[in-house]
Length: 123
Image (cartoon, rainbow, N blue to C red; front, top):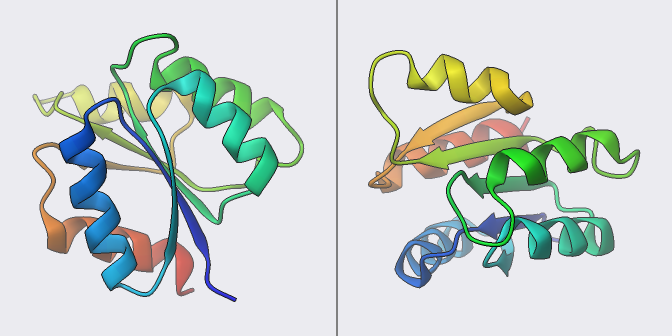
C-alpha cells in the first residue's frame, strides 16, 4: 500500500507540480485548496505526510497546522511548510509558529521536495 501525501496549496500550478513529483516518487497524493479543506481531508485519510502552503484563502496553513497538531489522529503526521517567505529568519519563524517538521521554499525545487518527502516517508 502506498503512502499518502496531502498537498495543500491554493495555487493549481503548485499543486500540479508537487503532485507530479510525488507520484513519480511512488507515493499517492490527496489535494486541498485551503486549510479548512486540508483539515477535513487529513482527518478522513490520515496522510503519512502533509505539504502545507502558508498563505491561502479561507484558512491559512498556520491555523490548519495548529488544528491538525491538536487532533489525536493527525498530531504525529509530519507537516512540511511550503512558502514563498524565504528571507533570513523566515524559516525559523514559520517553523515555530505552528510546530512544522520541515520547510520547503517556493518556487519549489523538485529535488529538494522529493528529498524531504523521502526523508520522512522512507525512514
